[in-house]
Amino acid sequence: MTQPLLSISNIDKHFGTLKAVDNVSLDIRENEFFALLGASGSGKTTLLRMLAGFEVPTGGAIYLDGKDVSAIPPNRRPVNLMFQSYALFPHMTVAQNIAYGLEMERLPRREIAARVEEMLGVIQLSQLAGRKPDQLSGGQRQRVALARALVKRPRLLLLDEPLGALDKKLRGEMQLELKRIQHEFGITFVVVTHDQEEALVMADRIAILRDGRLLQCGSPREIYETPQSRFAADFIGVMNFLPARVGGGVLLAQTGVPIAADLPEGLAEGAEAVAAVRPERLHLGQSGADNSLTGTIGAMAYHGLDLQLHLTTPLSPQPVMVRLTADAAEGRPLSIGDEVTVGWSARDTRVFPA
Amino acid sequence: MTDRKPLYLMSPALAWLTGFMVIPCLLVLALAFFRRGIYGGIEYTFTLENIALVFDPLYARIFLKSAGIAGLAAVLAVILGYAAAYAIAAMPRRRQPMLLFFAVLPFWSNYLVRTYAWIVLLNREGLIAAVAHGLGYDGELPKLLYTESAVVVGLVYNYLPFVILACYAPLSRLNPEMSEASRDLGASGWTTFRRVVLPVTVPGIATGFVFVFVLSIGNFVTPALLGGGQFQMIGNLVYAQFLTANDWPFGAALSMVLIAIMMGLLTLQTFATERASGARRQET
Image (cartoon, chains in turn yellow, green):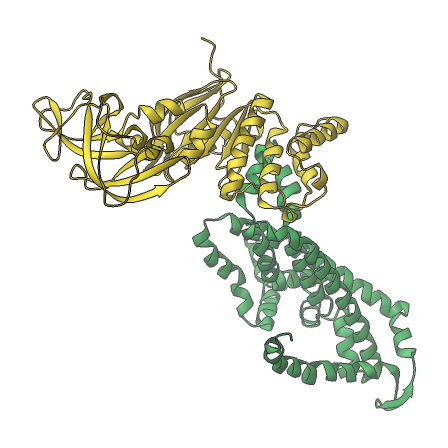
């Protein structure tokens, strides 16, 4: 195995009694698009600031290319950060903003001009090189901030909520744009985000943080399909949780019917638990299914590609969400108030302690 | 139709200023174009002699000297005030109002009292001399009071709060991520200050500088008390024309030139602030 580009080893950051980051270890590989995902207060931004050099870890170390960089100040690290507020210099033009980092490297003037020009092309703002930041739209500012960090060709580019300030449509476009740019430059990206959808779409791997601790790290598919905790299951995508209890070595729903599923280790007889299943894993009818439930349709929403049902069922205090593909829904007309039975397999059921 | 409400709200203040300031000022300034009567009165014959006399080397030198002292005071006040404002803005947010309050506190006491306090400090038997002797210094102390330096010190001291407030405004609005971005892009702390913080806060510096300069160049209390009549500043000259020499036309001419200089500076400062206002919109 080659050594990872970035190795975070048992890192801690305490602010007084608050453990903002608590014993996190992560390896990030060269050329990876990595997402740090968590709610506010999860420690993701503090972790990012330690990678940039704005915070010194209380414990543990950060290795970049095998060298401990934990105590190296931000201006001496081959790492650049794109700030959430963009933090563009208001008194400089777009071109001057982008050139700033290269001037700090004392590169020849010609090279600076050439690289700024190239970067302006990449972000498609060559026409606006002479504008000041306050004469740009939000999306344009975002691209200037990206260009300013990227032009330095860092070993590692950190992005703090890069799409947070953009409207929804622009955000969708920029997700793909960021991926394209990352691929084109071959630079490792570490993105901090609270938006699980953004993380799923963009990242090669995702680390979920909660209360300063690392909950789970893996590919979007692993995180989505095999969440390791109830929190992760709930945080990523939509999940149905059916309250249950362990009885006689099997899982029993709150109505007493057994739910076929692999029980995780450590769940004792009588323990409270939840069975979790994704809405798209439920299908109409119970043929070939290990589990089934019957409920009344309380609400229906048509989304083009799929049809979402909310089923009221004695198995769960909350309505159970079902996501049917347009094809599956076509065969049978459904309306609110209908009673339907849906089935799912044991394989698609995850069990967590309650 | 445009909304006229702002006009109604503004009119009492405008009327007050016009009636009790602009018109009397214009009346006094108009005197500059008349001759001085033999016994100190005014002879209403048009002349440009008074204006010409202002540019006589004797008086022009006083103008230059006043500008020099006001300029020095303004530069010193800006350096001290900017540093203090920078330090206050760098403190935790909730402590800043208290620090600002302390910085401005002397300003709430009487100008004369504050200036007399400097006499107590600087005179031959004053506090500074006492401390120097107490520390074992037996030699002759340089003259502190009634010097040009004493006037500069007094002006800087009196107007420092203005500069602190003027510089604090843009410094406190500065997005801290902007300095971090500069560091992140490879700049040292000093380069970050020189290339990012300083240019963005120039409007505050310009305001502070012009304020101190304008207030100092026309000041006559501080030069009279701390300068001890050893030399005259333009303010003292104007004072003397009106109250002792009884030459109102020449006093008016001096005032007119002084006002022209102030107006010019204030206009320049407004332009500088306007130009940088684009920058301010994006700071937060």
